[in-house]
Amino acid sequence: MTMVQAAPPAPVEVRRSIPGRIRVITGVSVLALALLFSALAVGSSSAREGLRVIGRDSGPQVVATAGLYLGLSDMDTQVADALVMGRGYAQERKDALARYEQRRAEAHQALLKAFELSGNNPAGQRTVQSVLDSLGRYEQLAARALLLDEQSGHLAGAPPTNVVQTYRQATDLMKMVILPQAYNLTLESGTIVRATYDEKSAQIPLLRFAIVVAGLLALGCLGWLQLYLSRRFRRVFGPALLVATAVTLASLVAGVSVLGKEENDLRTAKVTGFDSVLSLAKARAISNSLHGDQSRYLLDKGRADTYEHTFLDKSQTVVYLAATNLDAYQTKVASGAKDYLGLLGTQLAGPYGKPVIDSFTQFQAADREARRLALSGQPVQAVSQRLGDVDTAYDNYDKALLTLSDQHQKVFLEASASGENALDTLWRLLPFAIAAIGLLVVAGVWPRLKEYR
Image (cartoon, one colour):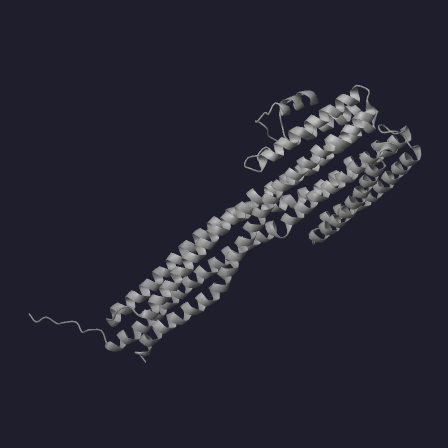
């Protein structure tokens, strides 16, 4: 029986199918490369947006508005100081009023900055305008109280009733209207920072994973293309495609590395930098307010118990130790208790934390002595203690807080700058990588296609 052998495929069909397959594999490789670089672009853009919000926009706005709270609080503190001095502290009163004017100018500048930083946020702009309006009313009441006090010429201690009543209106406006509104500005911007950080800290790992998948896919397609060409044309791997693969691998490694660094920098800027700076800014503002309560305690006998209670509340907000009254709290502080919480609870670790808690302890001890003098019927001596040892202890405490804040501010700025620099480098290199890979793929494929023309 005669066997009939099948005819081999026509050479023409083979010649037509090979270029088509090369084009298909090349096209798939190009699509995979496009997917890789798209993932790199999206990932780096997401990271840059997070750094922009935290490091340049809402982050600085939060810190600025926290500084505004401090400035407004210190305005009221300086008024209280001036009123309690009487005619026996002419130079100190002049200094207090000069600091009041300085804080007043700083508060207005901070409000203008907050208005600019609020951008297209109508709610933020309305809040700033409301603070400005209320601040104008406060300044009028404070000026009237200071004028009445100067006219009275009283000794150090509580001024006349009409002065106290006018000051009550001013300090109530500050505490119940102006400061809460200023704090709302901080909360609004802080919410934006937290939401942005939560969003980006969830997105960046996913985008990094997408880059890895897209990069492996692109490397696989380039390997497939090289293998097909080497087998079909019985040649070693083409140098152009090998270099294209190497550049793709380098782009993948660089992208993953940069996004990993961005995740760390974003976390450092937010948690170690921004959160700590904000906590310390709040602590300084509240500490200034409780420092003012020391003067208000001596100034307004009718509200002395209230100011003592608010002094305790604010002290526990800053450095929390369980106590039901001020005497018990200050005893615990003096004993060197270490189980403190509050705004400074997590900030007191490390070499810069000890000066803060030591100066806070001295401040509370000086306050305790001033209250003892006041309760023993020595108002002039109590005012002297308030303007002497208490002021010195508070200044040391505030400087220690500022030093600690500067350390975290440095971390915040360095992390933000480091993240942005890494992204800038990646963005400068990506166009060259894209162009180089494109040219190398063409250089590797085009000579093989020309053989079929």
